[in-house]
Amino acid sequence: MATVPGKSQPTLNLESLKWFGLALMLCDHLAAVLLPGELWIRLPGRMVFPIFAALTALHLKQGYPPDKYLRKLLPFAILAQGGYALAFGALGGVWPLNVLFTLAAGAMMLKPGWWGYGLLLSLFSEFPLGAPAIYLLVRGQVLAAGLCLGGSMALLGWPPAVAGLSVLLVAGVWTLVQKAPPGPRVLPWWVAYIFYPAHLWLIGLLKGG
Image (cartoon, rainbow, N blue to C red; front, side, top):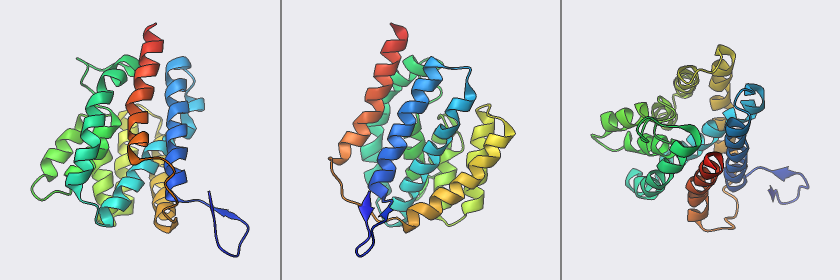
């Protein structure tokens, strides 16, 4: 957490929000494997994708090159897929694709001439309408982005109330990330990226053992 000069109260920054999202994701994935029938304990985890979708959209809106995002995301997405399949199951090991593919698909949709490829990749991922949500956030269409995420939740089998809450979460988190300062980076950028495949492989191997 950072502090505002002249004030004592803490303020959330983008770096701390990223690590909060990763911690929440870890708790959600452990609950999914260890307590699969207890959906209530996984409700806080519904914040995770809105956080990372909003962070991705913010960087892309600020001019971060989609090609650079793809070069960063895709190696870790490929590395994570085997662990994802072990932890949660995947048809042939490749469907659905893990969420890093969803984020990559969002960047892909912003490449000239690649919109359809990004949409197709997203449809085969964990959040089928997640990439369109990122694309729409970048374009300033927040309600439509929320509806895409709510649709993804419905397709994943979550109750209508959770899907509806997801629409509000997108709007709330998007407002938050646009106002939050970047914050100091304590660790190299790749540490957060490697955390995702590492935790999936660990959970998958523990589940298999």
